[in-house]
Every structure is written in C-alpha cells, then in structure tokens.
Image 1 (cartoon, rainbow, N blue to C red):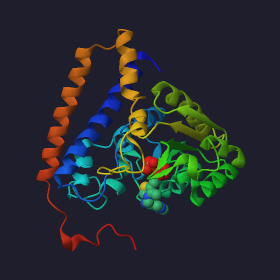
Image 2: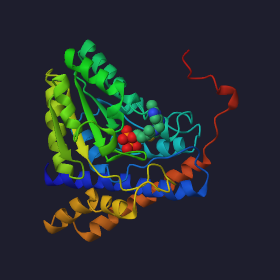
Image 3: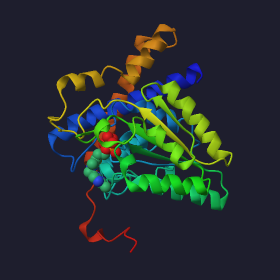
Length: 317
Ligand SMILES: Cc1ncc(C[n+]2csc(CCOP(=O)(O)OP(=O)(O)O)c2C)c(N)n1
C-alpha cells in the first residue's frame, strides 16, 4: 500500500470505530430497536479486503455488518436511519442493523442467520461468471459460521465451478459465548481450504497492510478466472458479542488482552513515527467525522416511520 492508501485506510478504520462507539452510546438510550453487534477491532479486515475490490464488486455480510457497509461506501445517513427503522433508511426501515443492505454499492446484505451470507456470495459470483461481467464477490463470516454446513457446501461448489469468490473468515476467537478452541476441529480455519482444493492463508486481521496484500492476491486470482480463495483474518473480539452483553463467560483478563492489538492505534503510531501523519491531522479527522455523525443522527431521528399499510411492499412472494 502506498502512504496515501495507508492514510485513507486509517481514516476508513477510524470512521468505523467512531461509528460503533456512537452506536453503543445511542443504543443505551433505548431508541434503537433490536440487537446490535459492533465491528470494533475488526476494522482492518473490512477496510483491507474491500480496499482490494472495485466499486462494482459484491459483498455479503453478517450480523456484525456496520463496518462492511461503511467500507463498501454505503451513505451514512441511510445507515443510521436504517438502524432506527425509519422510512429514510437504506432498506426503508425494514432491515435494521442485522439486515441492512445497499445494492447500489454492491452490499448484498447483513444477515441475522449465521452463515447466511456465504452462499449468497457464491450466487453473486455465479451470476458474474454467467454474465461475464468480471465482478468478484466476497463473503465475510465468523469462525462460528465456518462450522456450519453452508460454509462447506459453498466452498465445494465454488471450487468445482471455479467461481470468482473470496471467502473471508473473521476469526475473533468466539462464536457468541463458545470459544473457537472448543467448537472447531482445526486450529486454523485456513486448514479447511485443502479439503476443497482452495488456496487458503491465515493473516493477522489487525494489520491493515497484511490483510490488503492477502486480499489483493485472492481478488486478482478470482478476477483472472482462477477460482475461489479462503482468507482467514485473526482479530480478537474487543467487545461483548452484542451491545449490552455482560460477558460472564470470559474473564476480564481475556477481554483486556483482546484490546491490546488495536488495528487503528497500531497503524496510526506507525504513520506518526514515519512523519506521514501528525497528531493534529488525526484530531481534525476525528472532529470532522464526529460532526458528520451528529448530522446523520439528526437526519435519522427526524425521519418518518414506515406506514403500517405498506407492510407488504417490497415482499416478493
Ligand atoms: C443459524 C444461526 N444459528 C445461531 C444463531 C445465534 N447466533 C447469533 S450470532 C452467533 C455467533 C456467531 O459467531 P461467529 O460466526 O464466529 O461470528 P461473530 O459473532 O464472532 O462475529 C450465534 C450462534 C443465529 N443467529 N443463526
């Protein structure tokens, strides 16, 4: 990555972190319905992988999808309004946090069904292959999802049809309250690639440049017609599973450890040490984004609720 790309990457990660910090505060006030799961700590994965894509490429996301949405270029106002269930939201208030989608930007949807996005990305890749439009699809999913049948079926089908898809496992060490070490038959998700003749690598998911390098290779391979890849990105879960999770199942020491390898501090420190970024510029970035967040919340809360009489609109069967 060039210096400029690293600066842009830092800014993109900072935006996600500040977005999620604000969500946590606003959710606690009670106006945001449902459950929310934050992406804090995994920013380098969404930013590194999506940075390797073209705007027309496709992604599918998870229940932890705000970071993917922001990195793929979804408009901030529409995201926040969607979290509040308003007609002005990206999905006209029908999706909320866990089903937010933005087809205009190739974001095919967050998904409350764990593993639900993996096969959708395979479908997106198949469409691209049939249409010959050169698009690549990326499926983001967790380590827990990789123990589900749909993960294995998807990798097999993508392999035999040589589909342009990249499977990105965000391994944060936990599936809700179940440790990865207990629930998985392998010590690394990347080991599973060999069962489907899919090249696989495991990288530090808190290192933006490492994620970007691995993603660029996988995306190039897909775009050249050489088929799927599996990319495991390891990034410890900084927060609870959902906002408000008391985390009784993991000790304070473990939670503190997870916060040690911060992808944003790490890159910011490097860029400051190399004289590419100043503390003042970093503060200015924070201030600017904070103002944009204020305006997005004002827009969202002023938005109308969907009309109950419209409940059957946008339902296809
Ligand atoms: C099919 C299905 N099974 C179970 C759940 C309940 N559930 C929601 S999130 C989650 C854990 C998922 O873990 P992982 O895939 O590792 O993602 P992470 O939350 O760690 O990002 C579970 C079990 C669900 N939503 N869908």
